[in-house]
Amino acid sequence: MPKGSTIRSYKDLDVWTMSMSLAESCYRVTRHFPREEMYGMTAQIRRASTSIPANIAEGYGRDRTGSFIQFLRISRAPHENSKHMSSWLAVSACYGAMPCHVCWTNARRSARCFAQ
Image (cartoon, rainbow, N blue to C red; front, side):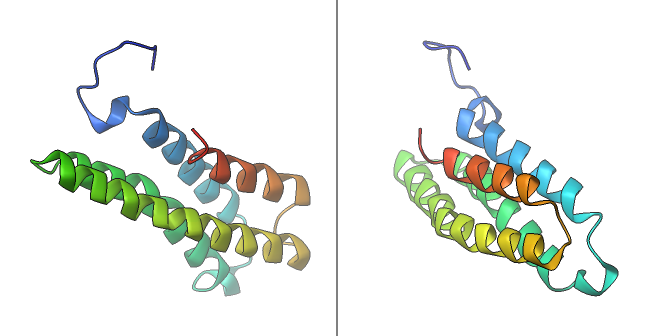
């Protein structure tokens, strides 16, 4: 979003856009995971990646600024989940379910969501 622009929706927030992009990427990559990992690695990575934009959107819909800030803090908790997700991505790379370069690209994108 260009500097000085008005935020009319959570969709205008850079962190929401970046976290959605990360979630889409995680879904795309995990689509090719082994079937036996559907309820293991696949579910864990997908759940961690989608919790960030979901919490941002829910908080934005609250009436008070304090509530929104609280939901941003909650969405930041998945930043801890991003460490959790990074670990799952690393395991999947070791397991051979995903190429290492894809794993670390997604892990870096996850960290960048909260670096700004």
